[in-house]
Length: 144
Image (cartoon, rainbow, N blue to C red; front, side, top):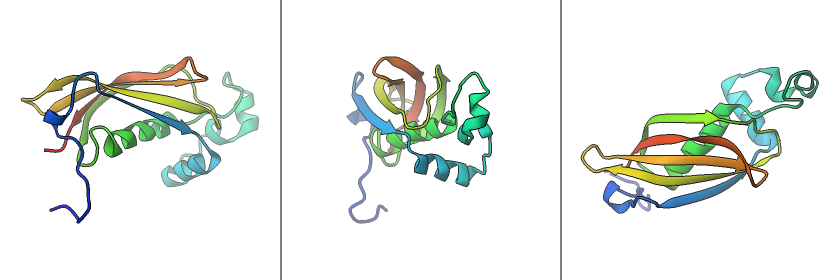
C-alpha cells in the first residue's frame, strides 16, 4: 500500500517509444563531498588539485559512479518514475566531467517490451553544449 499522496511512476502501457526527458545538473563541491564521504572513496584524482594537475586530466574529475547516480535518480524520480527498477545498464563514459561543470542529460524511450515489462531507455549526456560525455542504454522495469 502506498503512503497517502505517494505518486507511482508510469506503467509500461503509459510509456511511448520516443518519449523524452532532459535534465541539467551542475556538479558542486557539496555534492562531491557528500558522495566521497558516503563511499569513503579517497581517490586523489577526485579531490586533490595538485595531484590531478600531474595527470592527463590536469584537474580533479567527477567519479563516474556519481554521474551514474544522477542518471539513476532521474529514472527513479521521473521516467518511468517512482516504483521503477533498473534491471541492466550499459553506459560508456566518453570524456571526463570536471568539478563545477554543467551536464545536460537526455533520456529517450527506445524500446518497450510489454511481455517482459522492460523498457530500454537511451541515455546521452553532454557538457559545454556539444561535448558528449556519456552514452548508453538502461533497461528499466516500470512499476506494475
